[in-house]
Length: 176
Ligand SMILES: Cc1cc2nc3c(=O)[nH]c(=O)nc-3n(C[C@H](O)[C@H](O)[C@H](O)COP(=O)(O)O)c2cc1C
Image 1: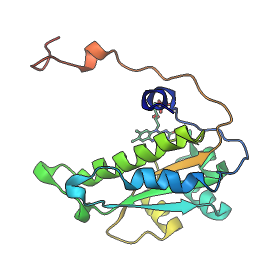
Image 2 (image 1 turned 120 degrees about the vertical axis):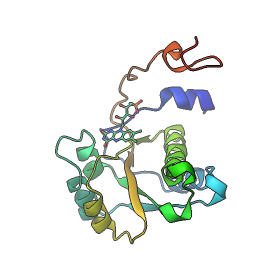
Image 3 (image 1 turned 60 degrees about the horizontal axis):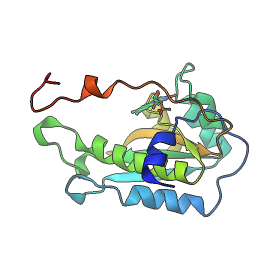
């Protein structure tokens, strides 16, 4: 799949068929995450592949009842738990680069998932302590995000985005 096609076609997928994630797809997705850029190439991330139903249900239970992706975390065949060590990345000017590093890696995984015909959805609204407990994630790692992975039951329409003119300036802030 062409990169621009992948960028345009990716959606947050919150409903999945019962079909499994093909065995050959998962290593490709994890490799796409592995080769992401990171601050000083520190690669502060770790990924937990969860297939066990009771563990997926614990992760779903770590999410508020009105999180729209809660059901998908329990129902998708695979959940990826994104962890990162803040101390293993940089903090220049107080900017927590571990969040950038981890986010880039996860987005690469998600785009690769889309290229493989699989759906994913960023989930960052959950109780970290409960998710940590569910997967026995040690300190100082932070549980940054989760994503379900599976075959999309349907592809939602694109969500609206701001116009280019609203978010891009020329030379100076505010200049069109
Ligand atoms: C950092 C981050 C956290 C998110 N957390 C959640 C979440 O907890 N639950 C959820 O259903 N969607 C979550 N989303 C998905 C967004 O709602 C979604 O990306 C946005 O509405 C745009 O839709 P699209 O991904 O289909 O283009 C999150 C997205 C990002 C980038």
